[in-house]
Amino acid sequence: MSLLRAEALSCTYPNGTRAVVDLDLELNEGDLVGLIGPDGAGKTTAFRMLMGLKTPTAGRIERTVEPEFTAYVPQAFALSPDLTVAENMLLQARLYDLNAPGPRITELLTSLELDAFRDRLAGALSGGMKQKLALCVGLLPNPRLLLLDEPTTGVDPVSRREFWELLHQVHDEGVAILFSTPYMDEAEYAHHMLLMHGGRILDQGTLDSFREKLPGRVVKVITPQRRQVQEAMQAFHPLDLFGEGEIIRARFAEQPLEALLDGLSALPGVEKAVLSEATLEDFFLHALVEAEEPVHG
Image (cartoon, rainbow, N blue to C red):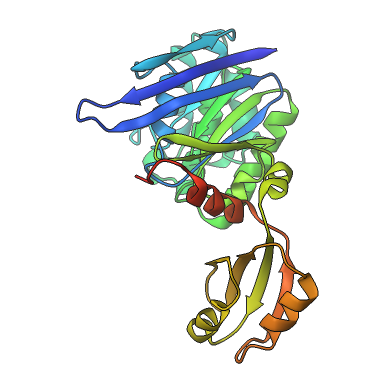
């Protein structure tokens, strides 16, 4: 069952900047969808339009889920820093007009390991704990649809992992989730992904479908002499180079694999050249190159 649908959703600011262009999106029961893109891609503007916080300049939104069963956790911490964890929860429960919220608050704080901090000021919490508190507030009314705008930006790796364990539990309980993120590893949690840049959707699908679309092969070259090896690799055409440190990831056009690997391994300074499974980042970079419109942030 469809919960939320957007068709050709667009937002153009008065200065002419096109923040979102022709966004098509549908969220159904049980979905776990990721809106993936770097800062400035238009993700937050898209979320604000979907939540009715910003009026689109074009397109339409159809909602079949009641507003009280839709929760939104914005990128910036929006709760009062001068109230304690428990006070923030009680305030939000009143705004949701929930009756006898005490047991629900205790249940949520315990499940997110915040119960021991219920008397701490929200402003004194760590980044990860603030995000957990924001999620607690979002889950107070038992939503059917949860929208999370970059929920783990600025959060340490351990807290990110814990946060996603909690989100998987929420999803397993039947809550449909739309999240945005600039992190490619985190994006792969989504069952369906929309790749966004410059306000436009470059492509959408699953990681497997992206891998099938990616032309050529991705090879991982390990070398302590990155610059020299990159220059030498220009003899292998055509290719795209990316990667960091002592690892060069390169996408090559279709050609005999054994000869390709042998040729790369023979380059001075190369320790190893092996076939590598394409990642979401590999496909995102390919989609940027293939985009018809100029890239803008």
